[in-house]
Amino acid sequence: LRNGAASVHGGAILAGEGDRTIDRVTFENNVADSGGGLFLQDTSFTIRSSTLRNNRAAWRGGALYVSFFGTHIVTGTTFTGNSAREGGAVRVTNGPFVTTNSTLSGNSVSSSASGSALHLQGATAFLSFVTAADNEGAAVSRGGTLLRLKASVPADQGWDECDDGPVFADDASCGSNVTVVPTLRTTLGPLAN
Image (cartoon, rainbow, N blue to C red; front, top):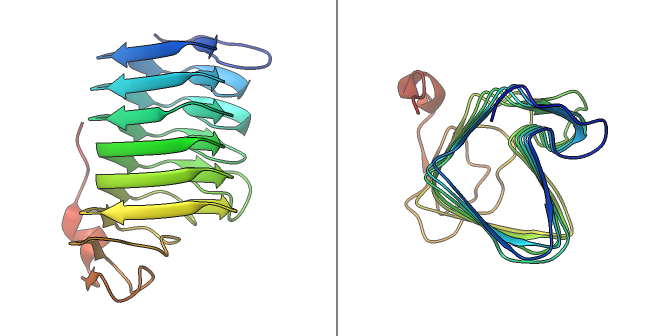
């Protein structure tokens, strides 16, 4: 789904209520005020084996904006080159957000400390086997949320809670349950889909 545009929500997809599954879809160069690629509200969803690339939101969720309740699962998916004021790649408001075997790379925000990879507000996020690298500025912003990482590589600033390693990072911001590799960002090299 490419080159979609919406004046308000969901440059490619706007969905609410009910269960949604997105499998093997590329969202690219979509634009909206919030949810440049997708805006999902009051819905449970699963995104599998997909790519969200170069999507843009003027306000929140460059690639994906998740609003309110439901179970939100992302697996085997790449978020790269997305941008927004808050949540360059993903913005989540409420509900559990579970991401596994995925990559968040090269995303950006226009507002400092607004989560270039992930912006959480009142949400609980669990990330397993996730690589986050080369996102501009603070990769995570969260208000009143719980963020847990497992077996992930948070090679950006802003990750401050980790659980059930091994977790590798370029600094000690994840606390004591992390293997610090000071050269991690340069060691990773370019991330591929």
